[in-house]
Length: 165
Image 1 (cartoon, rainbow, N blue to C red):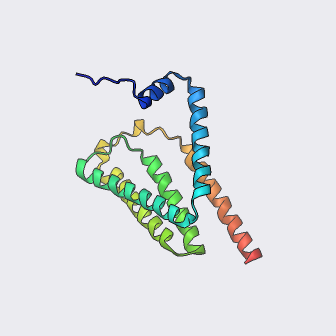
Image 2: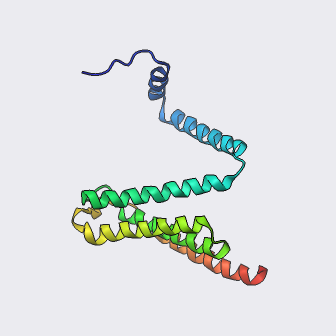
Image 3: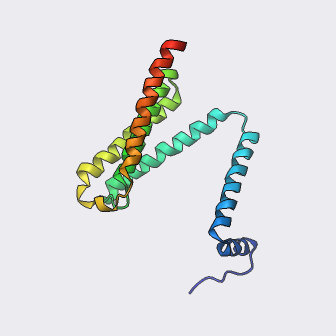
């Protein structure tokens, strides 16, 4: 037996949203995101706490993913290339934050990086039989472009560090 929807205001709103075209939905989503960012900018006094909470949530999500991989013994639905890209991003972010400032952000990035490396190790070695490479359709040139951008950023960092520091 299904549930009766009724004429609750939220049900009416969601029903109207479902009937809109995709372009209008994207426009409303963009408008909502911009409004949320403006609201955060106007209401938050200490941005530091917001970043700590967001990084803690990211670390907790990756740790929950590791637990799920250990418990279910399958990695179907996970992209190895995306995990490798995340590890590359976290390594670059960790190196930058350790050079500029060592604080709780560095510790949380380190926890996230180790958890991501554990996920990569499990997909590559422990759960290799459940990984379907054909379904992992992230294009490799995205990764190659990020490596190129990282090299350019590293060269510029070294050159600018000699000039300004």
